[in-house]
Each structure stands twice: as C-alpha cells, then as structure tokens.
Image (cartoon, rainbow, N blue to C red; front, side, top):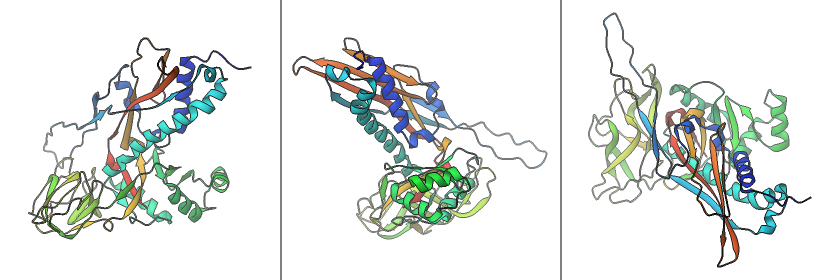
Length: 401
C-alpha cells in the first residue's frame, strides 16, 4: 500500500543513507574533527587542527631544551553544494522505497560524486609521486613503491592505508594480479566483479572521480637562481622567456643534490626530495620565475626534510612531458586528509524542512521544500556544507597514470 505520509524527516534520513553509501574517497579519510563543529554553521567558518609536534633527539648527558612548536592546519567550511529539483505532492504519495529510487537516488549520487571529486583534488597538494605521467601502471611494483614513499615519510604502517584508482588503472592491475590473492573472498570479488579488495598493504577502491593533471608548458633549462634557498618558494632562471603556465599547480619536480630525509630519524632516504608546485607559474621576459613549493625546504631542526639547501645553478627536473595528461591515482593513509561537514540552519516558513546527521561517520544533510505560488510547483533542495583539508600530504603518494 502506498505511503502517503512521507515526511521531511524521512526524506532527510533517506538522503543521508544514500549519501553515505555513494561516497568512496570520503569513507577512507579522517573524520574525527567533526566534533569541533557546533550545529548551524555558516560557509567560511574555520577551525585550526593541531598536528603532533616534532623534536630532535639529544645525544649525551647535556640537556638541550627545545621550544614546543605545534603546527596547525586550517579546515574551512568553504563548499556548500546541493541539488535542486521540483516534484509534486503526488510523488510524495509514493512509498518511501519508490520515492528514494526515483527521486532521491539520482540527486544524492550526483552530490556524493561532487564531494568525492572535491576531495580528490587534494592530490594536487601531494608531492610524493611514482609512475610515469601518461602511462597507466600495470605492475604491482609501482604501487609498492608508493607504499615505500609513505614509509619513508613515517606514515603509520597499519590497516588505515588506502589506494584509489581510476577505472583504467583498476583494469590493468586486476589483470596483472588475477589469481594472486591469498583470500578466497578477494579472489571471488576480483573474478566476479573486476574489483581488487585488499592487496599490497592497501584497501583498494575505484572511482570515476580521480582527477586528471596536465603538465605545464615547460621549456628552457630551469636552474636554481642563487644557492642556499630555503622555505616555501624558489627563485628559478633558465626558463623559456615569457611563457604563461610554464609550470602548473600540481606539477612535481626534483632538484639536483637535494635529497629527502626521514622526518623522524633525519636520515637520508636515498632519493631526491620531490616538490609540488602550489600555484601556476609564468616566466618573465628574462626566463626567471618564483615558484611556490610544498613541502617547504627545511635543512635543520625538528622539521628537517632535506639533506641540504640547493646549490646555485642546481638543475630542476620536472616529472612528465609538457602537456601530458595524467590521472592522479592516490595512495594515502587515513590521516593524510580530512573532511568536515556541519549542519546547516533550518529556515522558518517552509512547506517542509529537516536535516539529518550521522555522528559515527560525520555527515550532515539538509532537505527543504517550498511552494512556488507563481508556477504552482513544489521546489526542493538538498544541501551539504563541508570542507576538505590536507593534514599530512606527506602521508600520501600520487600514482601517475
């Protein structure tokens, strides 16, 4: 029998259920900072998340007192996204199952994909990279190297490591590893559904929302312009003069002679430190540019991350060929990224208004329906207020495709 009493609370709760089921990337990131937010938040609200402090280890009996310096990362509710439709009272007279299938499911699927896509754009903040732009990896070794990069950055070795890949990358790795899983349920899922499951220290997911990065225009022979530079920007010369987008945000490069160190032991990892470009770069008429980078160059102390400052005229090597498009498949620890959502206020004077939240997974969604007297239609909206942040991007690694 049709349910003629579908309420706004029922719609909100069903929308929340569908949202949880449709999210992919968001399910594997840190959500513990939800408790920092009260209800009825507004777009633009910010909290500062404290990260664990780092120290150096004293050698010998003489005391060496260090300042307690704790870094913070701002998390801002900067995205209010929603899907708006109109439907009739007749549609509300459907059973909840029919209403969910015909009306809510397409709306919420679109919303969940947008949330995931916004989060996956954080891959452009990740410097650690394996693979070759423009070539889909088909060997397990490439993904294992991503895990090694995370190990060298002291990412926890636990069951909170994830790998998210685009459809083509999933095809290649499933084909390469067919029959090699030890767990028979994993083999069953791989054979019947074409999906990975758990392998090589990661829980694997496929997402169509993996973003694509296009390597900058490049050109010239870029060199460090002045030795001893530290911090979050570099003066570089040797570029082709007057080229807009000679580097693009998300490009990755290394500097000759600048090695990576383990952040805990401060010992060299044996690899060059990779840096990611934080904003698009244009060379001037003399082929000079200022390049914003992450991580910042730190040569000593508790935050040391490189073996030393770059020398004057040290060569810069950018990963990839100019203009190459590459999906940013991503290996990451749960604590590398965070997603925060907050409840939006409920307005008065609406035909229907309700919100639902789930504290266990930290999600909140609002449903509102109003009546448009001019068009004789009921107009509804679903809204989610959220913010993404990269807390520890060094605990992630891009797998170029």
